[in-house]
Figure: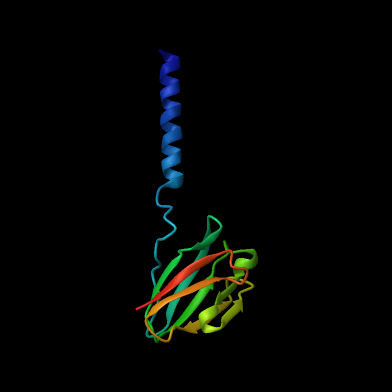
Length: 123
């Protein structure tokens, strides 16, 4: 009886741990834009070997200030929006990348090697 109870508790702990680790891990989650006035501030992270969140919603025609937090490393610190000619290396989390999306639409972003990717949705 004791062995069955111990095995059941271990199973519950394993399942609970798996749910804790993998729930809410949706890589398509969108960002929350923080800003005062017209400046839209966004912080990107790196999660599961990609940018996180992968979909960033912003307002077209308003400046965006993007920060790559300390979880972002390697080539992911070299951020590019090829369609707009934006290519910038953010060496530290204090460095910012500024741009404006000129019109509504979807704009692809990536690291300069194309390994990390995402989409900017300008509304």
